[in-house]
Amino acid sequence: MPPAAKRVVECRYYKREFGHYAYDGKPIDLRGWAMLTESKRYDPLARAGNTIVGPYWVSTVWIGIDYSFGVGPDPLFWETMIFRTGAEHDSPDPLHHWCMRTPSRRAAERLHARIVAKLERRMGVAAIEAPDPEEVPVES
Image (tube, rainbow, N blue to C red):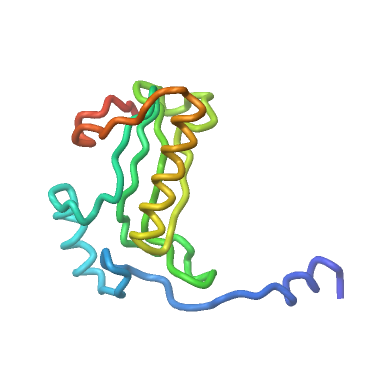
């Protein structure tokens, strides 16, 4: 057996069906996900963090779709992203559109706080709570 094929066989995969999840991690059907998605703009449970640090906006939200695609120990349906405010979509800034997904609101809140703290140290400025996401100047 070629070495690459052997490594694949020896890797540990967690196979499960991937799908849609409510804020609390309970599996839901497509209709339930669509209803939550439709209302998430107005639902504070859908947002775990919304912070500006210098020129960066850190956003942590529920996406409700398992972005581990069924591989890994847990579904990943909370997303933390960094955007450079006012930047073009193809900005050369390596932090612009940085993204990491987590399996729970608690993990998402911890990741958000860790990212904000790192940016505060890096930028030398204090974080502020961001305005409504619709008002943050990010071009796409």
